[in-house]
Image (cartoon, rainbow, N blue to C red; front, side):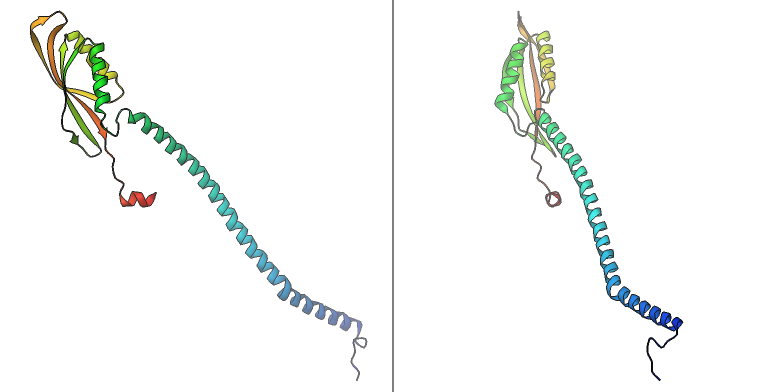
Length: 196
């Protein structure tokens, strides 16, 4: 008996053709389409990771810009406040300023005696004993000028005595303590340094 494709009935030929087509389709699916779909899925997953990284980078850039603006604002505030609370004692400048205030108020600055600084946690207090000569009105003008000075100066321990004998523009002698403040350089801890 001779077997051949031509000897099969028409429905056998169609069945054999379908069987071969299905076998070729399965082989094509397994060896070509499967790896292509797997590679496509990997590329899609990689694309999604990259898109997530880009989105995170954009969010980080927005946060960085906001953080940089906050740092700039804080630096500006620090510069503005450094006039109020400087980082070092400026005895000569402070003496000139107090002498100017006394002169503008028609007072005589008779003594300027800096005392030992008192160290606190983040600042030191720098007391200065002053002795002034003038009138009550002049003293009030002096205190007003000191209160408007941008640097912090506290006046305490005010002792007012009548001058004997009083003179025309000198009826009182005033002793007081003018305390100013100096910002200390606070060393960074190891944790703060590591965070930078």
